[in-house]
Image (cartoon, rainbow, N blue to C red; front, top):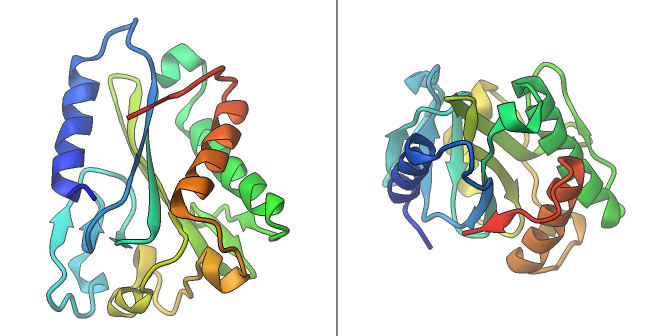
Length: 199
């Protein structure tokens, strides 16, 4: 399990040092408990942090929670080389998650007003990205099998009363690794990769 700060620093260094020949990568990680505030994040959306650390991040979005049992996929992609814009990147990630959930017979959808993926109006996956030099870092989080209590300590993504759900609640019992392998297959297909290096 990797600390948020360590992986964030590694992503920044990777993005800063990459060139036109650098292969795009997907990093699959799991973090110890942490609240992260995006660039526009407002501290009032953290209602009661308790003993969970708070990190001010450079990703987009408001506040979210990361913890054990949550699948994190950081996407380090040269979007200029791929020929897509930020909106297409976001939509492609959302479609990949929706397609993944469909394989579990779970009906899911994205929302235009709030990036992420939802099941019956409840959020199951969050997105937060940063673009630098035409390249993305940060990525997505998908709730698989985790302690959901910390979500009650925040307004998730800046929305009071937003309900959060996870795969376990929907009867999906696959491991984090099994879910990650299937999700990466969908992401690779969505963006026409023959392979996407995993850190």
